Image (cartoon, rainbow, N blue to C red):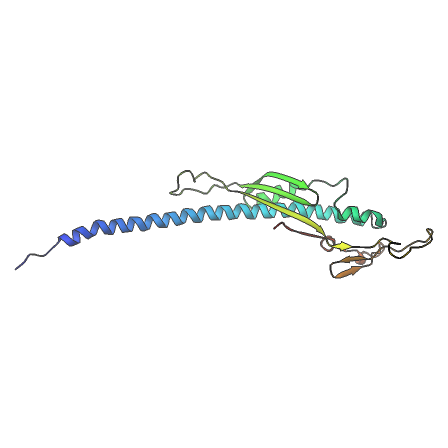
Length: 203
């Protein structure tokens, strides 16, 4: 009678350990990749929110300037072009929104009808099997632009105008598919900031 063979089982055990170790390594590797991706996504979310917040604040200021100068249509185009003095910088709004998304603003560059923002996450990727990643923080960039939505024709343009002494009505605003006939005495005839300007992230 032949004795039982234990050699095969003994040889299989190291292979089993190697396979399990390999699977664990892959699992930790996927976890590390997931941590890094989540951190990068968080940074991008913070950058997008920060840039949009700054642009929206400037949009509201421009809309306020338009209401102030609604009786002087010759100033309207400058307002729609962002060529207005006395606007406050809105990077403080970028700081606020970045902080709400666990990040901080590294740079905020205001331009004509645009904001470019760079943020860095406050939280690092965390411990992982990837060397040097534990304290790494993600950086992201975003640009938000402000686009005027309205067009108008100054009194007299294309129509011959009056004799110079007439009190002409305010121009009609065409904002996308909606027309507005501004009347300062009737607030319901004045478009809201979102009617005057569109704010979105740059492609």
